[in-house]
Image 1 (cartoon, rainbow, N blue to C red):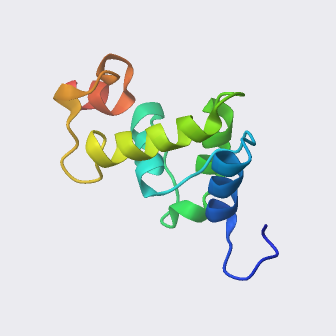
Image 2 (image 1 turned 45 degrees about the vertical axis):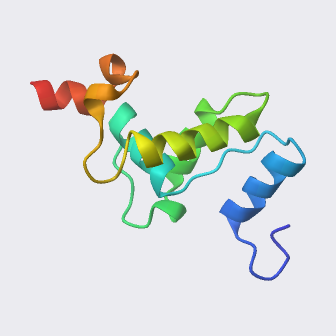
Length: 105
């Protein structure tokens, strides 16, 4: 897929995980926000090229139903763990989240 014009890493992985059920994680701004906050990671300025964040996304992705996982993270990042004004008080992960814990201290 990467050899097709206009198809980058994110798009190729999104298509492969959704259409062909391949276990490939995706990384966009929303997913990067979750990974940085929850695990206390510091990604590079351009998240889509950050090897640390891509590696983290791949490590935490389940072996099955990664397409659903990817969509869930995308939605969760857009609705709860938002780039601006995250809804930490409504987050079911807040008790384990590095970002929330550092904000409370």
